[in-house]
Image 1: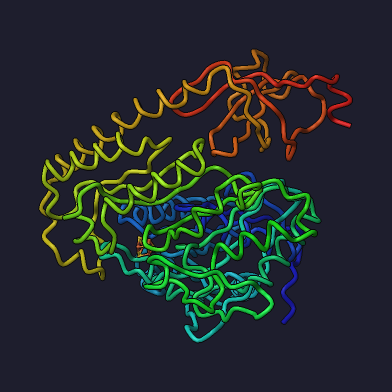
Image 2 (image 1 turned 135 degrees about the horizontal axis):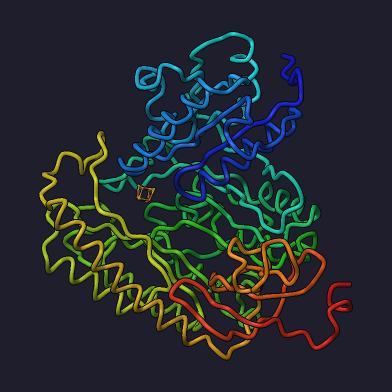
Amino acid sequence: METGPKRQEKYFIKTFGCQMNVADSERMAALLSERGMSEAAAPDEASVIILNGCSVRQKAVHKALSSLGLMQEVKKNSAIKPVIGIGGCVGQLEKKKLFRKAPYLDFVFGTDTIDNLPEIVHRVQNGERKVVYADFDPSMNYSTETKVQAYKAQAFVNIMKGCDKYCTYCIVPFTRGREKSRTIDEVVNDVARLVASGVREVTLLGQNVNSFGKGNENVKRREPIELHNQIGKVGPRAGEENFPQLLRAIDSDPRCAALKRIRFTSSHPLDFSDELIECYAPAEKGGVARLTANLHLPVQSGSNQLLQKMGRHHQIEGYFAQMDRLREICPDVGLSTDLIVGFPGETEEDFEQTLRLLDRVQYDSVYAFAYSPRPGTRAAKLADDVSAKVKNERLNRLLAHQLKISEALYATRIGKVMEILVEGEAKNQKMAGVPNGAAPRVWTGRTSCNRIVNFVSDSPRSLIGKIVDIKITSSTPLSLQGEWIHPEPLAEVLS
Ligand code: SF4
């Protein structure tokens, strides 16, 4: 089918939710750009408007739907008369029901049909109305190629999709389906291609990357790793490919030599194996040299009673043991987690156990939410018996508690020299003391342990993708500020 645009058209994509959705939006943008379209700065300049919605919490669904309402106004008032579509988990879950909620909507697509987007847009632009493309085929193997738009220092690389954990509160296994992994060879080839195009940091993505490889037979030439803790229970079995093998395969591939950093997200404590912890060791002690010193390992609660109700299949003592072992191997590791407050049956004592968890683990940051039931999940059948007032009060207490921890942890970095991968110009240019766009400019990047660092430079050239040494001079609970240390003159550093 001919799917090329009739004129130079623009798309506008609004993303809600997690990094998986951010990666999916990048893919949508790349697919539409391949069709000759360019990105619009605002929805009223676009002929195609897409909302990539998240359904993990009811509040997130409301956000996507209220944004859809605003797009209706754009459609009414714009001379371009854009077509409007909704995708992501919201599209996957709600499918044609969305047309009842938003009759002006033109198309709905799901998480597994993103590659059909150019065809869907072509169909609606040629007069079809209310197109739904939101099925997924559970028997299909997972194979894809990462698409990034232009030169970028960083790329998200999907390595697996779906989730088999079925935590009682979570809708993801219903929206993204059962776990499917790409093969190690396919991912390594993909990363090598990205490195050749200038990418210097990859984030390996999946709902539960630690169970990567489940069902993929291990090829004989790859050294099998003996699996000896909980990983065999739900993740890959001995003889199947696994996540530590993937990390080592990327790290040792000569085509990936220019890659500086490998990150990953997200994980489940059940599959967070000893083999994976050992990957964090220094390279000379058998670790994966380019694996960054950070870990996002969702724990959800500090109370075993609640972990059981949440169907998490792990206990808090095991989680502490994993964190202790990791810190022993990699003392500078930066940790973050996800937490739910106000889950059905949560008592004040359960909540205080979560506060004690924060004190014990010392996270750099946490993503905390008040529980809201998701229709269709097992937890939705439990009495939602913590009042909204108590949920809010606990959420605020938890965030205030964590803020103090983050503030103290960030302050310990003052005076240290940290290696930063520059991501771009900071949105807030106040630190430079001059108007936006003028030199000197404020640049922003991240440490290996995932802390944001801002610094000022009068470099006339872009620093994106450069690794620079920054001496930390001050901190806030959310970021660090510092000075660029370069012994040679700037021109030589940049040459
Ligand atoms: S591990 Fe649990 S919370 Fe995470 S995606 Fe799977 S079911 Fe949802």
